[in-house]
Length: 172
Image 1 (cartoon, rainbow, N blue to C red):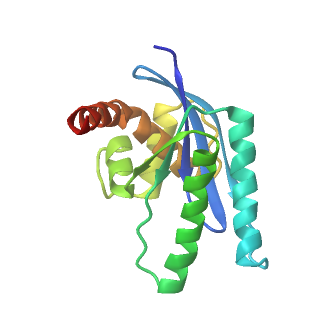
Image 2 (image 1 turned 60 degrees about the horizontal axis):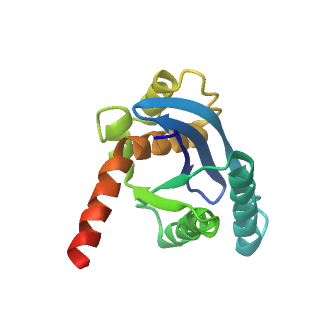
């Protein structure tokens, strides 16, 4: 089975982190990471377009086979939650438009998979990303979180594929 290139996305309206890894069985390799930014002074539509265009460029440049997006948990005001929801929609639709299968993972599952504890701190996640991907150049928390999402997907993608096959057999 050939290596699978995975795009991990940590959605945010100001900064959407992204990270690309290759998974070959249990071996993980760093490919690239960064963040797509939108300008605070722009309209919501312009900001969402900036995220869309940035993620589309990442996909075109790194040609991932699959994508994984972190589910967001927000306990701030409803306006902030709604804006983050828009950014998350962009993070889901851009890879889908590129023909990628898109999976979603809760923040707790990402942390548990990467660190071993579902309530780990961001610094612990970044440190474990560095351990698991020693060549990674995660500049900032957004990119490190996105790489963690990609690692989580690499660890759980086999189980998800098997569950889909079972569901298809039951429906057929």
